[in-house]
Structure formats: structure tokens, C-alpha cells
Length: 483
Image (cartoon, rainbow, N blue to C red; front, top):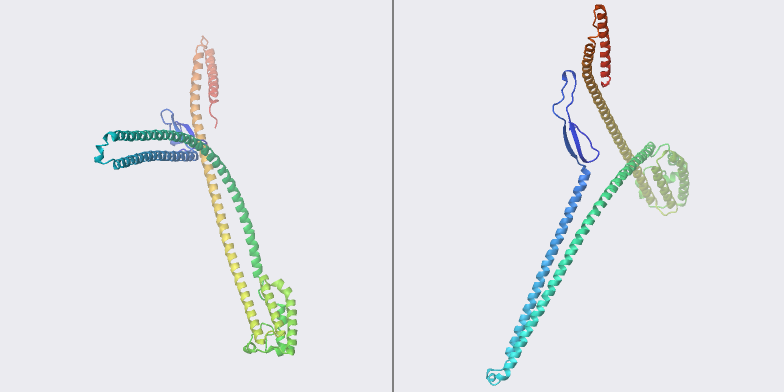
């Protein structure tokens, strides 16, 4: 099998001839016969598709023109039929009018009793009336003939105009078809160029997006991981350590049975059922407790910023703000102890729910990022494996090409060696022929009575013949192919 790629479509000639292959015991003689020549036609599939599309469009335009022609003929037949119907209807109306007038004339005719007396007078009148009717019929027939001639002339003019219009339309269609074909070719070239540029731009944009996305995912993963290593609530929080002493501080004991001093202890039933408002002394204790609460919160701010997640800091700051507002409302007697404790319990539950949701979301985000990282690693491993496979295939292809090139080189060397062997055999034959020709040309030059001189002359001729034959062999081998 022989394959070949041609740069341009067209008709090409191919010559096939036998050739000697020398491979030791597997040597093959060339095939007999003259060189075979044939022709092949190379077709460009893209150009062929363009030609085929142009032919389809041409057929569609021809079909459309044929349909318009058939429609014009149908309109023509319809017009002719319409004109004939109108002429027939007009003729029937005129005939009907004549019959009506004749009936009127018969109705006004004088009685039979007076016909005898007035025959001489009425005869000229009836004759005149008959002539008048005949004249009227002739005038109407003449008008009908003129209308028919006018209709035929108009129809012929319309046919001629339609014919000219059809010819102009055909020329316009042909011109338009040529313009469309040229414009389509230009558009196709522009489209291919635009698609190529678009592919390049899309590939560059895709690489940029992939790089930016990878960098964004890396930064986001680092942020999540750094947030997860921070505790949501730490026992080392200065606020917790600051509030631990309130439950055992003697000055706050009057309030310990009515409210949760630290907002972290359990609120019992008596606290929730107490509908009283603080007294003047209790208001002073609530104010001191609010000041101590604010002090503990302020001491905790630096620790939270250094150790807590930002969203956890926001949740805790909102809790502190709400608790302080409740203490302020309780101090101003806007709330009862029951309402205060219920609100504190709701705030603590909301804070706990928010922190648990934050922890779950951070854990889910970490799991998602971990899964995404594993997927990216799998993609990277798959991409690396694909690259290794491609490199292996390229290496195998390169080695196969090297083997084929080595085989081709060896085959060429074997061919040259075989040709050189044949050439050497021919040159050996030329050498023998040159030696024999030289000996024959000198065989009569050594005659004479002195036998010794004759032997020396013959030896000299043999030496000269060998030199001559060697020169002929070298001259012959100078044209042999070089390995």
C-alpha cells in the first residue's frame, strides 16, 4: 500500500515500474513489462462541498423560478377565464335586455280589431321599429367585438410585459446568484478566520480563567483552613474568666436568685416566673453588673480578634450588644425579671444555634474543598498520565520512525551494494576484454630469431596489458554508485 498527500486538487499522473530488490536469499527480480502509467483525480472535499452547495442553491433558485412561471401561467389562465366569463355574462345581459324590450313592444301593440283599419299607417312604424332593433343589435355586437379586441390587445401586452419581467428576473437571479456565491465565499473565508481567532482567544481566556480560578480556590482554601484551626469559643477567653467570679461575689448575691449573672448559667423556673421589677437597691446592683459586663467584653476584644473566626466574633458581638440592652431595659424597669430571663435565654439559644450552624458550614466547606482538591489531584494525575501516554506514543512513534528510517537506509545500502556488485561484475568483464584486446594488438610485435628477446617482449606485453586492464577497470568503477 502506498499513500501520498497532494497539496492541490487536480489530475496527476502516476508511473509504476519494477525494481530489483537484493536481500540475500530473499532477493527479488523486477517485474517484467513496461512502465505502467495511470491518472488519478484528486478532489478537495471542502471545495467539492462548496460546489455541491452552490449547485443545490442553483437548483432551488431554478425551482423557485419555475414555480413563479407556473404561477404566472395560472394567473394568465385565470385572467383569460375571467374575461371570457365577463364577456359571456355581458352578452347574456344584452340578450335579456333585448327580450325585455321586445316583450314591451308586443305588449303595447294595437288590438287586432284596429289592425285592419290602421294597417297602412302602422306598417311603416313596425318596419321602422324592426330596423331600429336590428341597428341596436348590430351596435351592441360591434361594441362587444371592440371590447374583445381591446381585451385581447391588453392580454397580449400583459403577456409581453410578463415575458420581459420573467427575462429580467432570470437575469437578476443569475446576477444575484453570482454575487451570492462570491459573497458566500468571502464570508466563508472571513468566518474561518474569525473562528480561528475566536478559538485562539477562547483558549487564552480559558487558560486565564483556569489560572485565576485555581489561585482563587487556593486562597479560599487557605482562608477556610486558617479559620477552622481557630476555635469558635475558647475557655481561655478573658470574658469567661472575668465572669466566673460573679456567681460568688457577695455584692451580686441579691440578684443571683432572680437573674443569670453571667448569662451562661441555667435559668430556673423561679427566675422565669418572677414578674416583679427591680427595686432601687437592685437597680444599683444591675448598674454595677452592667459596668462589669462591659469591662469583661472590652478585655475580651483583643483575644477574640487574635483567636476567633470573624463570623464568630460578629455573632458574639451581637450577643453582647443585646445582653447589654436587656440589662439597660431591666435597670430602667421596662422589663420584669421574667421577661429579662426569657430574653436572655432566647439570645443564648440564638448564639448557640448560630455558632453550631457556622461550625457545620465551615466543616462542609472544608469537606467540599477537600473533595475539590482530591478531584483536582485526580485530574492532575489523569492529565499527567495522559501526557505520559502521549509522550510514550510520541517516543514509540519516533522509535518506529527511526526503525523505518534505518530499514530504509539499510535497504538503500543493500540496493547500492547490489548495483555496485553488478557494476563491478561488468567492470571485471570490461577489464578482461581490455586485457585480451591489448594482447591481441601486441601479439605480432615480439617476432624474431632471438628466443630470449621474444620471451622478454611477451612478458613486457603482459605487464602492459595488466596496466591497461587495471586502468580500464578503474575508469569503469569511477561511475559506480558510492555507498
